[in-house]
Image (cartoon, rainbow, N blue to C red):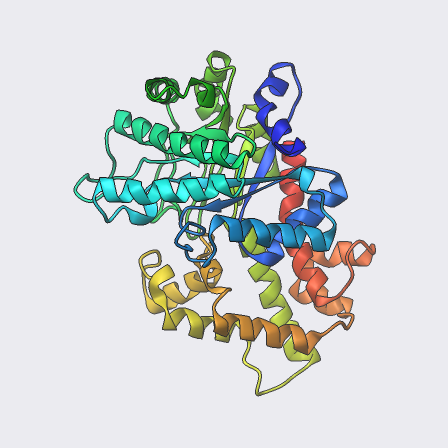
Length: 427
């Protein structure tokens, strides 16, 4: 294991002796987000955990076109450019299971999931979230809990064999999945049920038994996290904020689970105080993804307005116009998530908290538009009044000299502002 993986594996034990510790899990494949995270970690002398999801990266390429080994090279190349030590890097696989192939019969979907997990383990990913909670063809929304646990153990067996075959560091595991399927909540949220203590304890029990049946007790001893729902979520235009009183009995179950911490998904857009309290209550692994690309999109759109003033060019399409064109040409990533009138859907395409626009940044049309914007601004210093007008949250840091008033640095700074909130919460 890297030193960072060792520290992550020991997080429950560290908390048990009174150390306040947590870590943000960066769930993004955008190169600027990853660069910002690694630069942020380097500046703080901190570990960085970066995770890829089953839909994003898998043995068939996922929507990024990257297999796990490709994603590892991608991240490590950026780390090399910014001078981030790989001893401080942890790579994880999120929601690893049959989700990308759930339209297939269970046997076929699990065969593909097994090949995916094998690829992640072979590529040296050391944090593996096993998630077989989704029903496959003919199974309904979800199979029985015992079936979910057995499928998770089946995938763990694959990961163990692949790691032993390659001689890599044995993985640590996260189990449980009381969260929406990868991609986020689909509808407005009238209420959100917090995981019951009984459900959390039962999740651990049935997974322990399923692992044991496959003689994977040693693997289960490396299980670190349990995914539960602490009562946080976000939709297109709303955020449900953590309320400690609602999760008090759930948090108390960690006294009976000394091996574990809780992993909280969908923590994006939570106030800093809420994130702090989550970590205090044992939700030591905080997943964040859409908030980072949301912040990046805010900065990009601000720069687009600035470019129209500093470098006017009627032949250059504005970035919002270019992204609207790209998203309308290929609606698959947003159509089933955004509803309402045409005006409401247009607002959501660009400004929704669920940030479905993040799937479009790798598209050739989006890349061309961003490239044209960055070329128009070049390396010039952007006047502070324009930063105040269009990127106002970054104005103070520009004024005190901690951020250079240049386009690329302002993009990184937009993401870093979110990372700072998580750093403050995780200690």
